[in-house]
Image 1: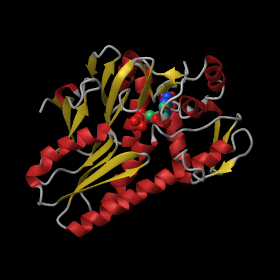
Image 2: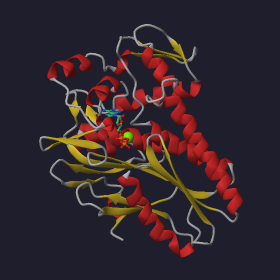
Image 3: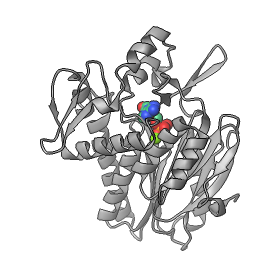
Image 4: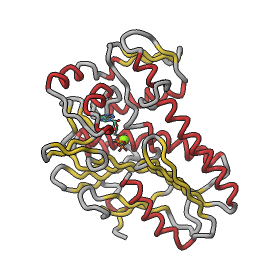
Length: 329
Ligand code: ADP
Ligand code: MG
């Protein structure tokens, strides 16, 4: 939540000059987080209608993918694990397939089958430290290769009992992409969608300048690592400072390395810039787990993907294509 507010406060500075000239903004809590949509429009009615339609779209995605909603399609897949093949919407099949691709791409750093470990650590519910036997058991049922997807029949089957898909590392990015599409369908040509830290900017601001997003410093409260200007691009940040609990002086956060079964320890934060938030969301989570060396190698290898990685010691690395784009104000 903090992440969103800081990014948005910066946007507010940068747009305040045009307030009243057709900047419209609304925030809402959905998908367990705060989100905000800002659009440029000549007409207030058009703006609000578009924003409301985009929020409805995000709600639709939440209802399809949340593990906190027992009737969601993901919950149905999970409760049938090891027992039944489940028919779901083609849209969900496509996103699960993409999630599996990101799992491959990040060598399992991003792992859409992380569900059993999320249930053990309960970070969002306040936290729990599992005993090693529990972690060992959960690690036996987190293989994304055991997700059987039949595209033609539009079905999913989790081969092992207890397996569970968790879309938490990709669904907000997808929701951000879908919200942008819905805004455009409703006549908006310029805007910024911030689904917590998964942000899409499209078009330019009313003054002709690009949208600007501040990247939160992982350790300095209310400080930016830098500012990036975006035009028809997405940015996501995954950090260990967002959702965590502290027990006996140690910080436990919400991104789990499925190879160890514990919160990933190689980074403080990872920011990814790319064309779509579905990609930036999944990659920021996956690269956070991979760590700074392998992570930066992957960023440099992927076309149209840039990033900033802050390692566990606080060292900052910026990808070659982003170096000249980071501003300090
Ligand atoms: P945020 O939700 O704060 O934006 P992320 O995009 O990094 O942060 O996603 C973290 C969420 O992704 C977790 O809350 C959990 O639901 C899920 N998750 C945790 N570890 C992994 C992982 N290794 N691979 C995929 N998803 C994960
Ligand atoms: Mg993510």
